[in-house]
Amino acid sequence: MGKGVSLQHLNHNEFSMKKIVTLDEFIINSQTTYSDSTGQLTRLLRDLGIAAKIINREVNLAGLVNIIGVANVENQSGDEVKKLDIFANERMMECLTMSGEVCGIASEELEDFVKVPKIPGKDSNYVVIIDPLDGSSNIDVNVSVGTIFSIFRRKSPATGECDINDFLQKGSELVAAGYVLYGTSTILVYTTGEGVNGFTLDPSIGEFCLSHPNIKIPERGNYYSVNQGYYLKFDLEMRRYIDHCSDLNLGLRYIGSMVSDIHRIMFHGGIFLYPSTRKYPKGKLRLLYECAPISMIVEQAGGASMDCNLKRILDLSPGSLHERCTVVMGRPAMVKEMKEFIEKYSAPK
Ligand code: P6P
Image (cartoon, rainbow, N blue to C red; front, side, top):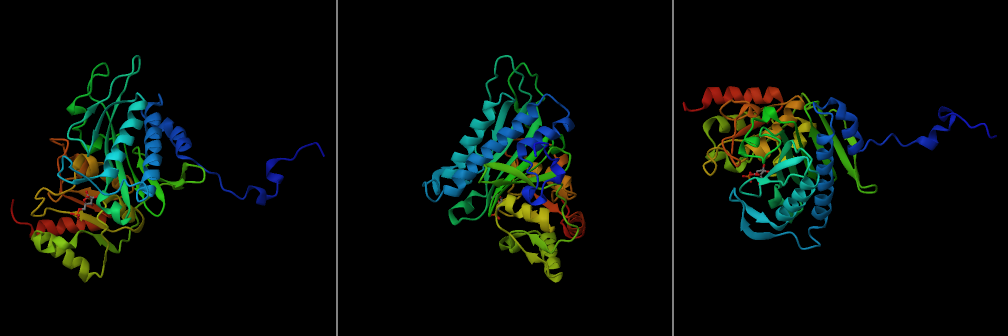
């Protein structure tokens, strides 16, 4: 009595909980791998985590607090804006402008990028690109939606305001990319170029906790994900590839929310495609807000991502903020197969 005992002699059952690694702790511990060890990116990633928690709370309450439904406006992409889109955008902007790390923000909900006022004496070295609530047409019917974010290091001088060229960078220049999936549970998945990690929100402690370390897309993949409703409007190569997937007895899984469809691929493999359609000849999905960040995550998890012109998505140079592109991403073997169908069946450009 009174001499104390060493930890390992304590009854194991008293320590049955495994070590919880929160998102904040993980980010801080990973800080040493960032090219800048000043903690600026750390603070920025943590602010994104806070925004995700706030949006999660409202997404879960949306049906109760009357912020579902349409806001009777259209966004820059011509999509019908939901009340929750506006709410999510406002919360993201608030959380991102507090840190002083960000000199500019481009949101899928806004026509132009926003210049963030400089905090005296503080250099803000990053711009952030957000799709605050992707797939929000699903929110009214309680289907999963997501937030997509990505971070570039600014190219303009730190002393001045940001400019458009800070945003129009190739995906290969991204410093970080991530998504939040508001589903059966809320999970934040991100990469800084050192692999992909997933953090599940534990509402009982209000923290994102490491739940899926070092995510790798499985070699196998029994699903393909495309809006087959457009089958008759697809180009020949796409129709032939869909027929091929059917011949292989692959399952069709398509939620209509990119984050949800990609998250399934991260764990079950398969392929996601949004090719050219009559309504969207250049593809529907936005290069900067959706395809580039998701492609960084997919590639970091061992996958591949190209457009239907066989160009690597991360090598595409955006010409404008809301530029659209076609996309084929997922298991490398399946992306390669689609590449072969395009080479074989696509009409000469
Ligand atoms: P469609 C949601 O509106 C979105 O931008 C993506 O999240 C999703 O993958 C796609 O559009 C769904 O488009 O034409 O199949 O309804």
